[in-house]
Image (cartoon, rainbow, N blue to C red; front, side, top):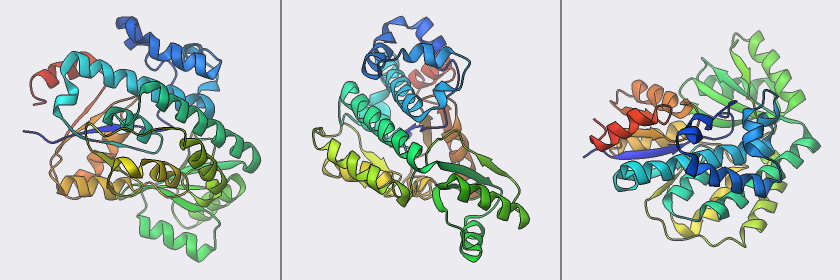
Length: 314
């Protein structure tokens, strides 16, 4: 029997029109988006559909990604019994909130309130500090961290995505200086991310404390399936959730380390639930590097995925 890991993406996976086709075929799931709109005070489907860059704003993209991911998860549970084959769930940054919903840690509406609070706090912080993130491609993490140290750059490694992809976080001025220094040292592929805040670094210490305080009003339920923290690089229990979500804002995401450990534990099937297929690509790179064979699925073609699920994911 395959060991199936459910994966939920974070900010940066948003795109115009995401989920629109899914709702056209399955209009009963519009309730999720209506709840999101009511809580935000703005029509999230209008924001998803329009051509402007509003969806890329932290306060909109985070609730939108969470809502779509949760709706897709519930759809797959009802249509194909997904919860019966899921071995565990993991999220990438914001994706932790969708993963915890899938684990049964809280209801959709409770998680939505958390995500809206998180995104609002992060958006406020960004206005104050002008944070920025950028992906460094094609360079090893030791090379990246070594250059940061030698050059005395005031930036942080926020994500260890795979062996040759690292994400940096810091204030915009410092990130732009880092890009210049990296290019002068032969590291030329550096991509600014569609993230308007310096996540997963000490710059969000105040935001982390405010989020922890807000979370005291949330009750965390017993998990239905295990939850793996890509911040702590390990399975955590019900009582560790609030601390994990607070720490996540100031600690790096150890995606590469987490997937390597899960591969070693026998997880051979990875299912990305949400917009795009970013996490599947990362897993493919990690598995190839250490010689593991994996099956990777996503929710871009739901009809095909349901067939695979009902056929045992072969």
